[in-house]
Image (tube, rainbow, N blue to C red; front, top):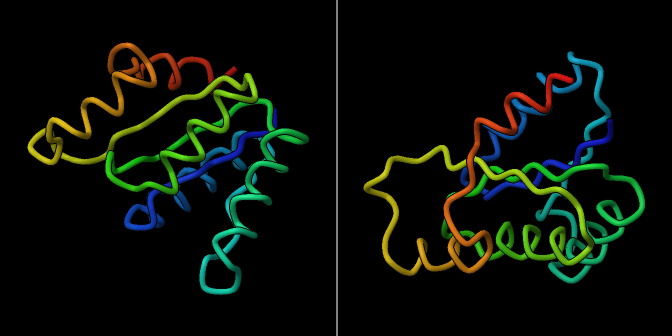
Length: 121
């Protein structure tokens, strides 16, 4: 399975760990372009291309605040890709605007356990 792993910039380390774990499990893992070497426009176009053409599923490690990762989640959903979101931050990190974003996307906070079960297949 080919997995596109997008992430909030503050969660890059967790994304790299997830990438290594998924590759060890035999998956092909795609990541966003490095923002220090590319323009924001380039990153958006490349992320959309990678998701549309190559990704079977999108896994987002989202802080709940990052607009870039939020955009990637919305783009993946618009492309009809299965999207799984992990929020590796404490519950106190979430505020009402963040919760509204998640509810707008999913209707409720996603069940992360489903990802853990399905990604091992």
